[in-house]
Amino acid sequence: MKDAQHQSHQSSHAIQHHWESRYEQNGDHSLSWTESAQSLSQQWIRETLPRSSSIADIGAGRSMLLPALLDAGYRNLTHVEWSQCASQALQHQLKDQASHITWFVGDLNQWQPPALIDLWHDRAVFHFQMDHTSIQQYLHSLHRAVRPDGYALLATFHLDGPETCSGLPVQRYDANSLVSTLNDSKDANWKPVKSQIWTHRTPSGSEQIFQYLLAQQTSFDP
Ligand SMILES: C[S@@+](CC[C@H](N)C(=O)[O-])C[C@H]1O[C@@H](n2cnc3c(N)ncnc32)[C@H](O)[C@@H]1O
Image (cartoon, rainbow, N blue to C red; front, top):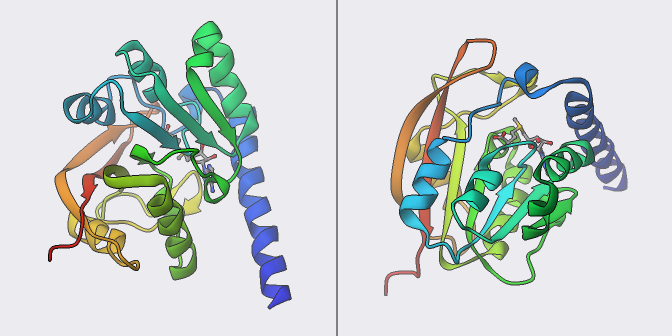
């Protein structure tokens, strides 16, 4: 058991190192996941959540989502990311505005908000959870962070999307399998609010098919 824990700690360390060096060695134009601030996530958040909402972007990297939400008037924002390099670069870019965001540098499974949040946003992070244990660990972190009636907005590679992301294998989903995976955890009851297949054009011009899902946590029906 101790050996298994030691191995999993080592591999988690190796994956963290993978991301740190991706950000250290590449500008945004060389990272396949870079997208403009006019994202589907931003559009859905603005349509669904009031400006007072607490929103965490999980594995946010150098995404322009939080800066775009700041511009739109959201102020209760958290950036969760284990690459220090990515987190610092975005803080530097935002200058004084960075103080409106709470910054957590570390493993998303170690992050716990001081108060339950309204929305957990994850684009291209959940799909790296490849086995039952890491999926369950992720779902546990999600459930303990989001308030009852709160939302999760997840974007993963679609079943017709690429099998790897940044050179790492990914688990692909459609809307149904994403909802049933969210609900494959004790006391979970997520209802889909909306879903969409979305083609992302990478900075190098290739296409990646994503599955987007906005789900709301609901109380159990009596
Ligand atoms: C493909 S990138 C997507 C970045 C961002 N969500 C976006 O859409 O631009 C995956 C990101 O997840 C971060 N990440 C992966 N596993 C993580 C973990 N366990 N805890 C925190 N961040 C993680 C990586 O460092 C990287 O920034």
